[in-house]
Length: 131
Image (cartoon, rainbow, N blue to C red; front, top):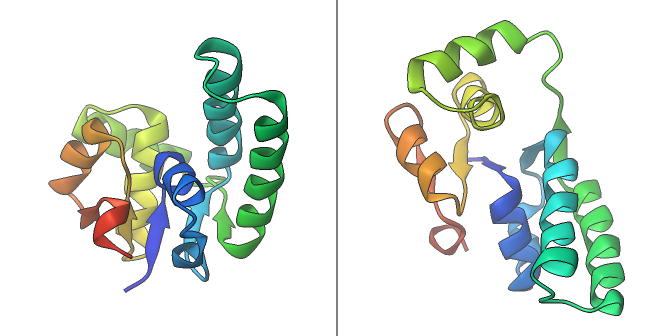
């Protein structure tokens, strides 16, 4: 089975140095923005990483996004909104769920809320269950 990884799972794969699990799998174009926001929080808000680590992680994210197939939501906005309504989730979360269902992919996330909502609709796992 192939997987679609959300940004929380991609970031965990990077931090745990298991990016090989991402090869020939999928994510969404919005993951780039979500990953940037994760780095912003780690550096600016929580002060968990220094500037050098921030730059290293940015480079790694660029590399990672070149080894996964990045899907766009174009032309599927209505279906994603329907999914969001059905599952009472955000548009962001519904995008991952929609593509998991549409392409018969297992959704990999570290986000408990997304995991619980998606579980009723598609096959889901955390990263540790994949590698």
